[in-house]
Length: 212
Image 1: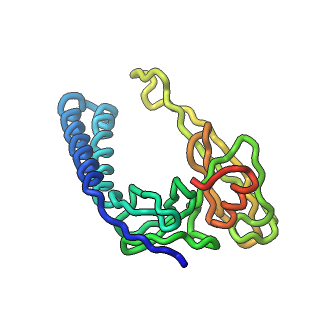
Image 2: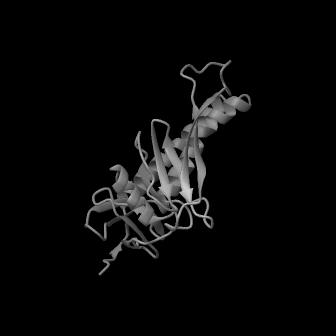
Image 3: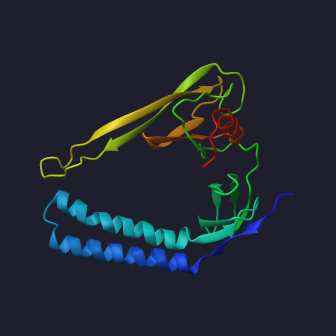
């Protein structure tokens, strides 16, 4: 039987996000007054304001707490409405739900977009079959992660100059499905996401990783 748990709003998280957001926006306003004199400096001054808006959004949309319906471990950072692709750090099971409740994700679920995640080890193999449906593989689809590298010494002459690192892998697909996986993370710790929960578990079992 699949247990259902209820999400409640954390007052401390709500106030924490809200307070930090207000401080960030106030800092942005102050920076705009003292340093904004052109396009670049104005953009830099607005960065704390953007962060502040995100924090205020989290205060109302991401301050839910609950317990894992699988193992009972505490979960935080939840939406108080709809959640999908939430991982329990204790039992490494995915949970989801609507209307402020959580249940364990169906172990056979195929999501609309890649949400089931694990790390990519230095040496790895893909399980046989399509990464979406498990049908025989007929082609490989290349997915890439492009990460911008910030300059270690930011000067007026280097502003706007960036370099990038691209990490790519080729993922098995059948003739019907595409876009069954994506990459995230960083070049030093890349992560792969699958639409298929069964394929994620097969990948983890084959390569000794865990869902994240």
